[in-house]
Image 1 (tube, rainbow, N blue to C red):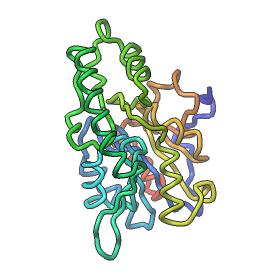
Image 2: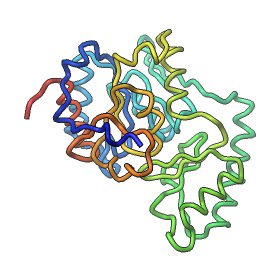
Image 3: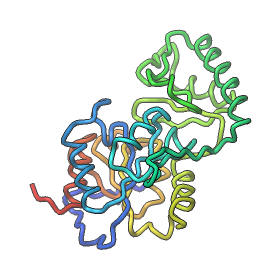
Image 4: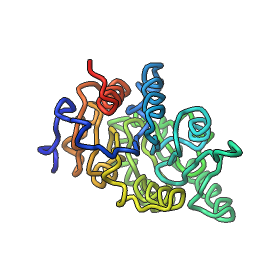
Length: 268
């Protein structure tokens, strides 16, 4: 465990990162608060962008959300559905381009396979429910954690069933994300940086921070030298092998604001 290295955000000094340029961040319960984007959190995103920082959300969120975020948030690019693709808006044309990890011909069979699985899961685990945004997901079957009955359909039994059917499982603060593939947030973030900017993520590690809150952020916590958790990450401290280096006093989007203020040198 690396929790003993975790330090309070109050100890962080932006002067230790004089060349900070890239801010990679989770979305659900890191930028949002119980599914809502608070105006003051969006204002912090805009302030970071206006100050010249490149913001790259890295989320388990669906393609539909990623398209909207790419168009309407001050971001450079976004990794979606736990790494199944990344999107970015072309500066000149304003068109959204998506880099899929699966070819068009493979996607046809993938969709059929996922639809069969979705039906099987509903039969195997009555009462379970899928994310309300499932309709705009391309690759991910997202099960609401809140719908997993602790007695009838334990989390472990649902996970075991999905894994036995060949899926990769990632647990966020709100969903069981499952998909047929071996990607994750980190591998696709590396691809994004290499293909869009001609850089290795390792090259810009000292120019970057990552902000997250949950189990599916662990590869990012482990990779980035300067990783931050909003306070709700502490609920996973006994499950994460790689904890963030810094933790905010406040949870969710309020914690994100605290990190943004620390980066911008705003005192409160």
